[in-house]
Length: 262
Ligand SMILES: N[C@@H](CCC(=O)N[C@@H](CS)C(=O)NCC(=O)O)C(=O)O
Image (cartoon, rainbow, N blue to C red):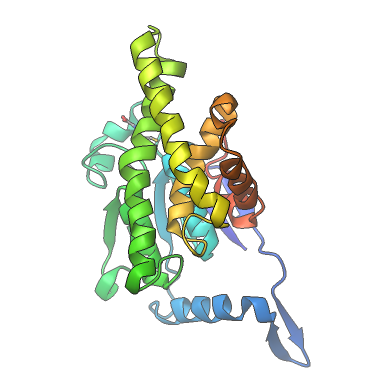
């Protein structure tokens, strides 16, 4: 169990489902959880004695922010959430600009970075690659499978994120409705869904195994499915993939950090 604290003082406690039990005074780890348990032990062992290493996550309830909270939940890493209210312009405050000079969430500070030094990282793709490499999870360490995942990471960061963002802006939020812009980004959002749909007809996940590519794509595709379900009518495999990801407890937890409406 651990707490998530925000600058506004909200606090949430999580209790993981039972994975470790005591039998005859010895700890028994469920076989399906053994690898994860060993990784967590290694993670805690490498931390300075007596000091609890916690990642600071700077975020807001948006798709880009939730990529990182899902990842931290998947990895079961302790973290503290700091709400940066982008609706109030908090991303432009000098103290946040020291963390991300590009004035956007998400960003992390890991006091236990490479060489035991603190590290600050912005850009969700870079953050997820960092966390994957730190833990050895959700990104193959070498070979063709690694580049397969990385190409879908770039596809998300350079394509889906910005294009779905523009769709949201022009079709949903802009006070002035510009038909050319709405049509352009509707077409582009649909085109991108048609790029991943055939892939998901063949595979359960975007790459061979569940990976950071799924984590990065999920909050954006899910937000489109909620706000413009008609755009997903012709991509049933994308809809199936969304359900598969929603069935993961870590995804559900991460999608609620920070809770919607904060
Ligand atoms: N490429 C960046 C995009 C980050 C981004 O656009 N964040 C938005 C929220 S979803 C933001 O902070 N916007 C505030 C602003 O533009 O002033 C990433 O993936 O981290």
